[in-house]
Image (cartoon, rainbow over all chains, first blue to last red):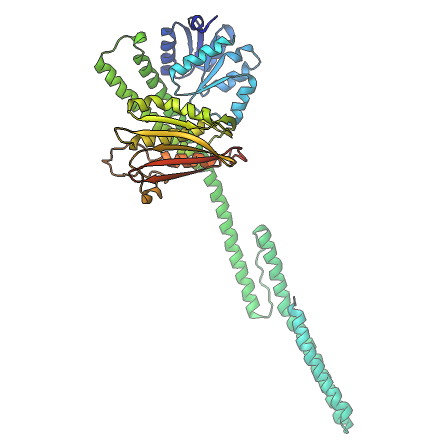
Length: 130
Length: 362
């Protein structure tokens, strides 16, 4: 399968972020690129749907009220879904946490604001590994 | 070293011995036996009296001094002095010394206590400042994301529909302003992190040529828009350092250079070369140069070569101080060579092997 046919493959992406403007923008962009998007604007709903359904890629924000990204990662750390996660955060990640993320198998960490073309590229890269 | 006691006994001991010896001499030399006996008895009493006197005085002087020494030792150990108790030493000056020593230590002790409390308060404030900073950093960066995203989306006319030239022009202006705002926010946050010595540094094995290529790729489009010729010139060497931070320094230096190159025929050269155990990176421009006086100040925070409000150049004045902070955190040095009307070259030298990444407060 070459890259071109791959990009055309429809992906299902879960976006967990409490900022509605960001989820709306990203989902608009992804849908225009013919991908499916599911939005969770809070951690609890995010975790619930994450455990219930299958996704190609999961975009996860870290700083959220109530259940935050770190806690979600803690709860699914032994699941194979962890390799589908892209962390998308505006907060600073300490060296220790960066190391921890690497250890549990997270390949991509993006800092907000991220270029949407870069985001799309990372999403397709992650889905390729599956 | 001698002790007061020894000095006193030496002095008065010798004196009393001489007195007694003279009495003894007169006793054996005189013909008058009674006179001799009286002289001997008298000298004996005087010398004995001197000895007893010496003993008394020495005790009166040395006891309070010894006590003072003990108290001083105690105080220097735990900064706390025992309560002053009225004691009679018989010697006025020593009594006075004791009293004032107590007064002094009392004051110093209280000041130290105060200082400790203040220190705790300051640490608390510092902690809150850091918390505020990380919160602000998050809050400032978050809204930029949808703004930039939607601008990019609108520019992809195949996705959201065609824009006419005026609309595209307006969108371009918004885009430029947003990028400026984003850079400003990043500059302020980086400067603050440098101040707090909380700059994150990672250590990776890098190829210097790859770093230069990366910077070249990132700045080619803007140089093209501004009609500036960007050139790269790099040997390839391995270096253990932080690629993102090196790029950040380059980004600041190139942004500066772009402000100062002539509108026509502007030229910027970036590159790196090896020098002993270091790699030297450079950004060279053919701008109007920086005078020697100005060179002394450019690394200062908020310094602007033209500080007037009417100045044409944009920027926070943080760029070079950030470069200096980052380079220092990477264990390197940054410097400038410039000749007015002939251009400027900024250099920064980084050790090939990050010997010991500056210890960062966690």
